[in-house]
Image (tube, rainbow, N blue to C red; front, side, top):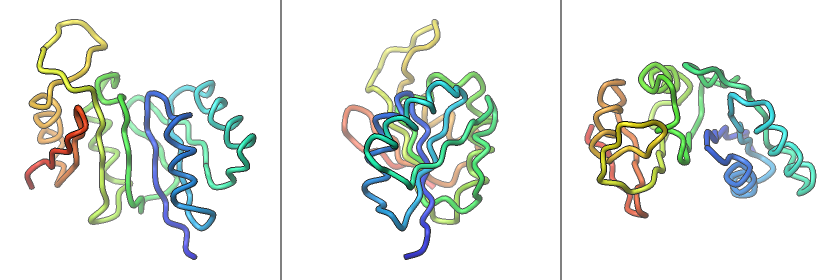
Length: 152
């Protein structure tokens, strides 16, 4: 089986990356991405404990996830978009790592309240405006369990 790269950029990647690693199986690979090495240490410990050999740790930067591959099939961002210091440059750089037709899944808490302080979750409108600013072709936004595909 060929390696099918998948990425995990999450506020709690220790929860997401192992599940993805199990789903893609031993023939696939999951890149767990964080700007914090301590966050990646938690994932590494869990992967070792569960015998998951297909998770690769990637220390990203504020504006670039720095993935080692440019042909990712999917990137899943769980409760992270609202935490990014510079979401537009990050997302623009992120798209360079996706293969044509790949999926970008953004999961955020469902909120309709605009908040002035950070970090606070983003409204669907603000997420879609942010994605449009990046020139993204498509993404799937999940808020409150309802997927909403960004128009192309």
